[in-house]
Length: 101
Image 1 (cartoon, one colour):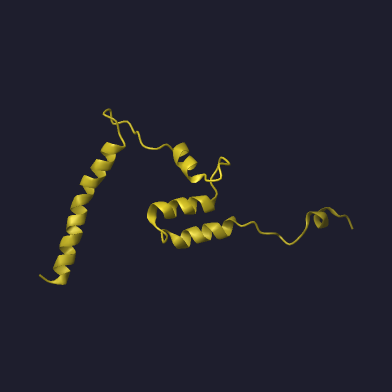
Image 2 (image 1 turned 30 degrees about the horizontal axis):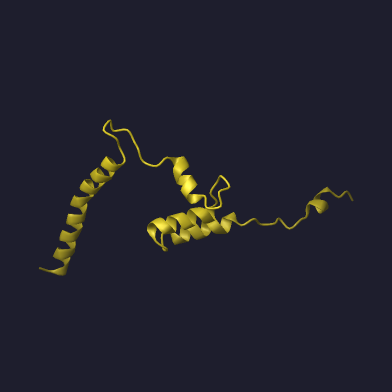
């Protein structure tokens, strides 16, 4: 067998296995009435909220996603989000804005 044929067969096997894996996951996250029993949004936020202040900042979200998916997960996007989360000054102080000349 050629490498191309082996690669194509491997991809075909993965594609064929996906519905089975998705069905198993769906079975785990639903009850007998097909109602969702997985974690709620609130439960996921509580898992990410490491400083327990009631909300998740971008740094906590990044740590959570990297823990779930690995260190390189969406690295560029998360770096941009963190960079935008840093407060930046406009260059003028409040006193300068309200001082009359």
